[in-house]
Amino acid sequence: MSDQVFFAAGDLLELAKATGEQFGFHKQLFFSQVISFCVVCFLLHRLAYKPILKVLEERRQKIAEGLANAEKIKAELGNAQAKSQEILTAANVQGNKLIEEARVSAAKVLEVETQKAIAAANDIVTKARQASEAELVRMKAELRKEVGRLVVATSAKVTGNILTPDQQSRLAEDTAKQLASN
Image 1 (cartoon, one colour):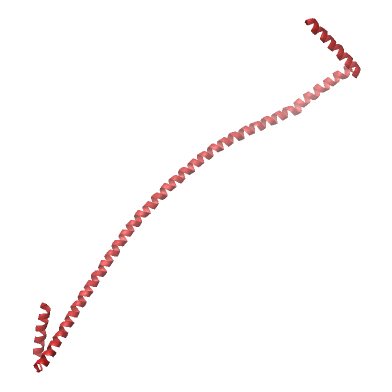
Image 2 (tube, rainbow, N blue to C red):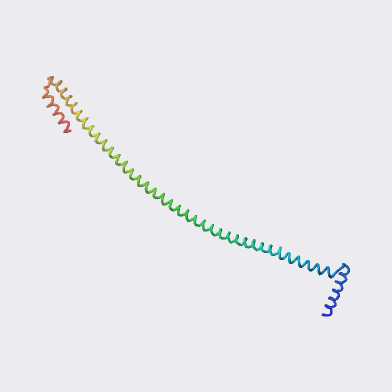
């Protein structure tokens, strides 16, 4: 088998020589082109490839930092939302507490004002009763006087005599006593 490889390598070498001669292969030009190619590769590697790799690495780092910042911001946003929810819940509880306190206060004020209104109504009723009683007493006194005058006038007509002032007052007093006893 090694003989076959050796013959194949020899055939390949002869084929390469024949191809080189056919296309005009020159060793000096070939080596100069290899050297030029190596110089260009070295310069490209030094002046272009390394800076491009450096820029790519910087971009990769910036992207990684941006992703890390995005995760950090996302976590902070979650914390801020949780905190705002807590604040809203606390404000809601406090608002409900204030509303309940206002209701209790309004109920107390309503009770006080109701008591004041009841007291004022009782005062008005008491004053009205007193005024009514005073009016009744006054009317009774007027009625007694009027009845006494009528009795005197009627007695004078019935008896046909003119009564003296003393008789008139005695008759009026007797009538008033009888009215007062009824």
